[in-house]
Image (cartoon, rainbow, N blue to C red; front, side, top):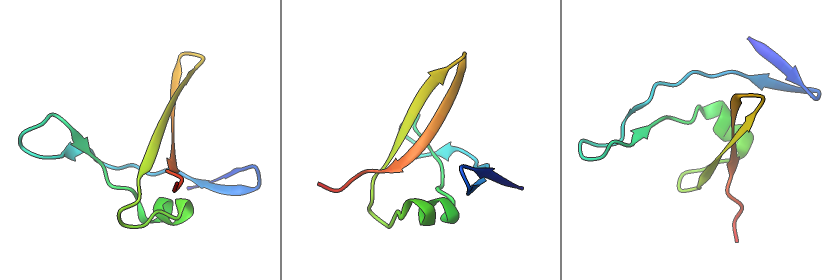
Length: 68
């Protein structure tokens, strides 16, 4: 399904969280290719998760970390 926001097509993705390894309790998710393309993320880049709370709801956004 496609969503339009500010004249841009917005998409919804579901990904499954998996254990990062057998030692820690960290979880790993995969960045969908289309999201990586939109953010211009390449192998080795850092992606920042920004979590905001508003009206008792959490919103998570992703952005590629800017290079120094």
